[in-house]
Every structure is written in C-alpha cells, then in structure tokens.
Length: 194
Image 1 (cartoon, rainbow, N blue to C red):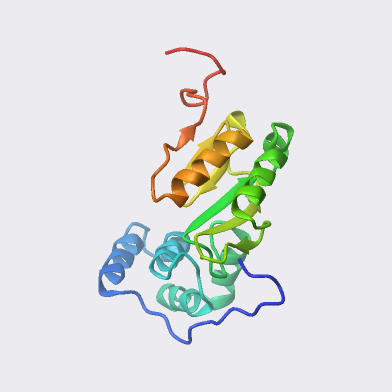
Image 2 (image 1 turned 135 degrees about the vertical axis):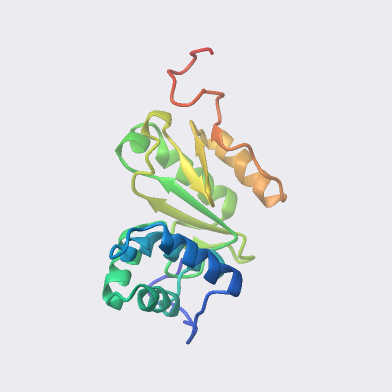
C-alpha cells in the first residue's frame, strides 16, 4: 500500500495476456446476454492477478472498455471493495480484520504482533517487498475471530503467537496451514469434536 504522500507510478497501458483474454471471454460468457457488465468483479480480479497483485488505472479502463461500461463504474467497484489493491502490495498481503467481532476477540494484539514481526505499520510494505500489512473491515469469519486474510487464504482463531508462526513460515518460503489455528472444524463451537 502507498502512503498518501507517495504517488504510484501507473502504467500507461494494460491488456490481458492471450491466456487471460481467453479466461476473460469465458468469464463474460457465464452471464446472460445483456448482463455482461456483471463480470466486472471477476475481471478486475483477473487483471489484478496478472499485474503483480495490484490494479492500475489502465487495467480498470481495459475492463470497462471490454464490458462497454463507463470507466467510473469500474472505478467505483475497485475503490469500494478492499480485495482490490489500487497500489502495489508485497508478495504477501496480510489483511487483519479489525471489525467488531475480531476487535472484541483480540485483533489489536494480532495487528501488534504483525507490527513487531514485520517492522511495519498498517498501510506499509516491508523494505524487501515481502509483506504489506493492512487493517480491513469484516472478512466474514466472525465466529472464528480474530482472523486475517493473507493472499487468498484465511487464518482464523489467531493469537499473537500463532500469527507470528504464520508470518515466520511465509518468510521462510513455506505455506502455513490456512483455517483455524486451534484445530476448530469449520465454525463449530471451540472444543467440539467430530
């Protein structure tokens, strides 16, 4: 993420790779005739994945032009949802939920553990470009609070210690096990067994 004082160098052009252009056609074909504009969210996701996990204005324009919608409509979607990164982020985007359920369950401690382990504050990226830390609104796993989304995975039932272990594993090139960090099955009551 950028600070407001740091302008983001925007590419002048964007186009889907041939492979992603085919994926885009398949995505659009999933929507009924006349409703193709509904493909805006998956197309923005595809563009973001192609562009190092952030969405430049040129990519938003490309999606708008593809769907024949006013560009401002695509900007509105990209600026509303936190899943779209409108500035460069690290290889691992650590998004800690700080909404009410997570807050009441200790998300402040999770954010602090991230600050200490990564040496950055929310909205910043480590100097090596490995991690970006963000505070986000509800990620929808309230019963397993506190939780964080890192890249495409949810890490739930976190403690400051388990968050540290997850970050250590990622820093060492490992893939930590997503989901509950206390062994909870789905959203079952804590301590419930199969």
